[in-house]
Every structure is written in structure tokens, then in C-alpha cells.
Image (cartoon, rainbow, N blue to C red; front, side, top):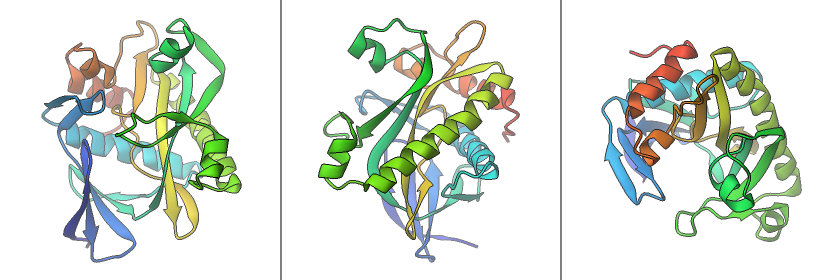
Length: 238
């Protein structure tokens, strides 16, 4: 049994706690929601519970398909045990359909299918607004090695090949999402979370938004949308 010893880090919607094991942390999913670099904030009942179970479901699907992940097991409705990683300060973003910042940057019409999907790196920094970077930045500033860059791209592409059809089978479009990786005793593995907080999901027929854009754009029914996605994917929720 793993127990929390002290708080390690508290982010926008999750808190990490140390355990008696130097190789494990407890990840607490809170009911907090933020947008626009935490300029917009709110709290939604059941959000932590839904995201915790949703993340566990997706991580287990990925692990079963050979993607190494930090997830170990659910401990409670809002807590999971995860491996303690040395995180890389990089976000790996996959875009299957054009929306958001891509449309603003390049004047691409929203909803355009992107084939092949677009892959982008972003430097993880709230202070700087997570600026887009490339391989050259990563190598020059020694955020990751050339070998690691290749692994990040490979694991992200493999993840997309697993999740995109999974969502399609549920009548959902996995529009875009971000992944974060870290080292587990020298091995790169998927960390952080995979929830509707960090991806965009649309209904395949109506293109109704079923992710955190409902909060960003004041569309309402935020948690109801998260729960609908979980239900369609056959992700069990308490």
C-alpha cells in the first residue's frame, strides 16, 4: 500500500505527492479547471473523478498496445499511483484536424482534415505561454538528445495510431492532443495525463465539442461532455 508523505508539486488541475517509495508518486486529480494560462478558473464537481478514471482507461489501452506509461493503478476515485519520472520540458502535439492555434497561425480553415497529421514541439513554460520550438532548439538547449527526439516522435505517432481509431469506433474525432514524456530510470515513458483537459474531441456527425473547449468558450455542460466521451469509449465511471 502506497501512502502520501508530502506534497511535491501542485499544478493547474492535479497535485503530485511523494510516497515512501522513491520511484512512485500519487497523482491527485482535482475538480479545478483553468484556461488561457490559468487566467480563467472554475471548479466542476466530479471533474477529478472523471479525469482520473478516463486517464487510467486510456493509459491502460496504450500500455496493452506496447506504449510505456507511468500509470500504475487507481488508488481512489481521484488518485492514481504513477512512476516518478524525470520529465522533459517539452510537449508533443499531434493535430489530426485543424483548429485552435494552428488556424490562427496559418489561416487554415477550422475542420480541415490533416493528412498526414501535423506533429509539433512546444516548450513547456507557463511564463512564456508554451512557445512552439523545433529539434534545433531542443538540441541546442540540451532539453533532449537526438535519440530522444526520435523516440518522442515515434511514441507519439504510435499513440495516435492506437487512439485515433479507438475514438472513431465510438463515433468521436480525436482532433488534437498533447503528450508529455519523462525518464523512468533511463527509459522514456509517457507521463502526465490523457484526459479531455489536454485534447480536443468532437462528435463525428455533428462536430459538437466534447472537451475543455466547452469551458474555454463558455459552451456549458463541461463535465457532462467528459462523461459522454467516457461512456462512448466504454470507460467505466463510478
